[in-house]
Amino acid sequence: MDVKKQYLYLLFTLLILLTSVSVIAAGGGGGGGGGSGGSGGISPYSDLKCSDTGILSFTSGAVWGVTIDDPDGNEKIVSGSWRSNKFTSDEALMVKAGKYKVKDPKSGNKTVECPGLAFSCTLMKLQLQECRQLQDKIHTRFVLEGIGTSSEDLDYQFKQQDSSRLFKRSKNSISSDLKDFKITKNSSGTFVLEAELSPAIETMQVSHPRCVGQYYVYSKINCSGEESVAIPEQEQNGQKLKCGGYLDIADRVKCRLQLREEQADEYENFFPEECKARNNSVDQEQCLKVYTAVQECWDFPNGPSRIACVRRQLKLGEILTEKANCNALDAGKRENCNQELREKAYGLIKFRLYNLEEEAEELLEEGKLSEEEVTAFVVRMEESKLAFNKATTKEERRAIILQARKAWIELMKKAMMKTEVEA
Image (cartoon, rainbow, N blue to C red; front, side):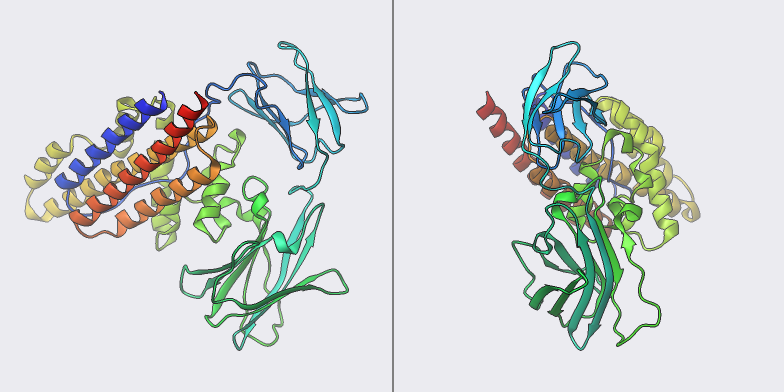
């Protein structure tokens, strides 16, 4: 489906959502993951490149075991993964600067210039060792090692106690609440961070923005308010926490967008945002079951057949008919029936928002949108689903869907502009 048809079809589905909200009256269901693929109309090797992280990538008309000749003429097998017809190697493989030959048995050999390894997430060590907050002063220690690493390039986040509020410091910005932010390196090679912050802090996270995604290079630790602690807080490693461990929703979304095809069973790695926001583990597991149930529906083409699959998985028939059936029950059963109907119907509505996320990801893979544009859009859709769950009136839910519709229109304008420029 081209961008214009995709835009019109999904705009039509959002109008259907507005009708559904008018038919039903109160809340539950919804999104975070899925599976697509596709390299759009990119011609073979037009995107052949080699990065300073030692990654080789290109689109080809076929899939095969990739081998190369390095600048010294040595033949090497390149490990990596194919997503549709696009190959992306593992990191830190193209170490030496110079010309590399990609040996394609079908289309012929291709040559690419590699800049040499200047930075690597896989070779980085990042570990928080301590976080204390005493009299509005924060003191932390962490280890940072690896090629091309600098403490100035890291993102630092502090989560307020009993709140989702984050105080952040990155290379280009800093929260106004963080005062006198200073990082030094002691004689043992450990970094020491000191800053002033009044609100009580629960957790600290340090991450590298270039490594958000499959490498999970980040570290979290609980912050103590005591002068000395007999047993230090244990660092929580990103390799264990996966995408769901990031403190910021934008990082969690960006991490999900970076997942490779072989990581498709991503719900083992992290909870969808809606499930993550549930109050207890029972509600989270129930939410997760809904997401897991609809995964098979991504195998259907976008349109009526996919939605029919979702309806089957949610056990949802025609809403007006089901509502009439509920209202025909006696008073004791009527409300429970209507509540179950609302939960299923709202689940379908939120799946449609979820579907917009997947369509945006398709456009990212086709080169029609940037990662930043898609990340921002997916965050808006995830926040829309969370707001939808909290809404208490039909008008509030309608307003949320109208905002989602507006965000989709804005995104499609960007995609169509880029398509027109390329044409």
